[in-house]
Length: 559
Image (tube, rainbow, N blue to C red; front, side, top):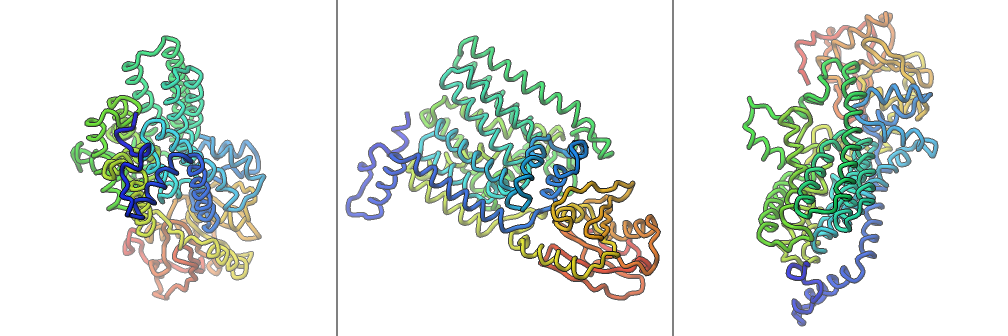
C-alpha cells in the first residue's frame, strides 16, 4: 500500500556506501521496520520516565487541588455534592476517591493521569500506524510522547489525559471495526467513547466528529446492514448519555454559577474571551484561521513552531489530495477524519457553546493535529522515517527549551515541591494557631491540601466566604477565584465586617496559585508599607491587623 511513499522495504536503493551517515540512517530505518514493537515500547518507557519526573517535582496547581478535594470529602454524599458543582463529568473524581487510599502525595494522585497519558500515546501510535505509512506514524508518536502539551496534560490531576486516552481508543477501535467489518469492535469503540463522555464534556464534540466520519465511511464502503445497525445503536447510546448529562448536570450548573446560561458562553472571560466568536471583533474566516492556528500553537507548545505546524498540516491536505495512496483509506474519508474535529469545535465556538483555540479546552484535537502535521513533515522528508523523526525531535527540543506559555500557566521552575514545603513550614512556625488566614478561592483550595495534609475537609459555606480549620488555624477564603488589588480591598472590608473582628486581630493574607495580589499592590490608608514573605514568585504571605484601613480601591489597579 505504502511502497511508493516509504523506502523502508528497500533502504539499500537510497544508500551511498561511502557515506557513514547514510549507512547509519538506512540501518536505523531497517531497525524501525523490523523491530517496531521494541522501539515502540522503548520510547513509551522513556515517555513514562519523563512524565514521572515532571509529576514528582512540582506542587499541585489550584485546579488539581480542586479536583482532589472534591473527591476527598468525608462522605460519599459530600463528594457527590462537590462533583455536582464542577464543570466536568464525574469519572476523574470517582477514580480519585478510590485511588486516594493508595496514597495522597502529588505523584500518587497524578499517577492515573500518567497511565492515561501513556495509553493515549499507545493508542495514538496504533491509530496512526493503521491509517498512515510507518514514517508518518513514528513522527506522530514522538510528538505524542515528548511535546510539552502532551506531557503537561498527562501529569496533571485533570480530566484531559483520560479524555485523550479514551477518545483516541475509541477512534482506534472504530478504525479496526471498519477494517475488519466487525460489529463487536464497534461496540468496543462505543464503550471507549462512553467513558470519554464520562471524563470531559468536550467529548461531545469528539463524538460528533467521529460520527460524521463514520457516516462518510459507511457511504463510501457500503458495509452490511448488521454493521450499520450496530453503528446506529452505538450512536444512540452516546447521544443518550450526552443528553442525560445535559439535562441532569450541565443545565443545573446555574444554581452554582448564577451568571452561567447552560453551556452558552462557558468560561467566557479574559482568559477564553478570544476562543468564542464575536462578530463585532472578527469575521468568521479570520476567527476560524486564527483559532485553528492557536490550536497548533498549543499542541506544539511554542508559537512559531506551532505556526509552522499549521502550515505543514495544510500541506498535508494537498499531499492527501494529490497522492491517493498516502493512507490505507480513501483520501476523502481521511481528510474528513482529520478536519471534522476542528470543524465541529469551530462550529461550537461560533455558537458560543464551547471555546476553540490554543488552550487545553481543545485538547481532544491533539491526535488529529499531530497526525496532520506528521504527514506534512514526512512529505518534506520524502517519507524517510529517520529524517522525519530527526526533524520531529528537533521540533520537540525547540518547543521544550523555548516554550510559549499561557498567562495562567505556572512554569515548573516556579512550582517546585520544595518551595511549597518551605511555605508550609513558615505557616507552622510563624502563623500562630489563634491567627486567621485570609485568601481567595484558589489559595484556599491549595491550603485544603497542603495545610490540612491531604485529610478530608468539608468547608463551611457562607454567602460570601468558605472557611475551614487545620492545625488550629482558621482559613477564610472569599468567594472569588483570584484576587486583584481592587477586589482584594472590597473583599477585605467585607471580611472584617462579616466576622466582626476586633481591630487588633492579626490576619495573615496568603496568596498562592496562578495570579496573586502583591503586598506592594495594596496601599494602607496610613501610607505605611506592608511587609511580606515570598516563596518563589507564586507564594506570598503578609500580615494585617483587622483594624487597618485600606486605600480606596478605585485608586488601585484592576489586575
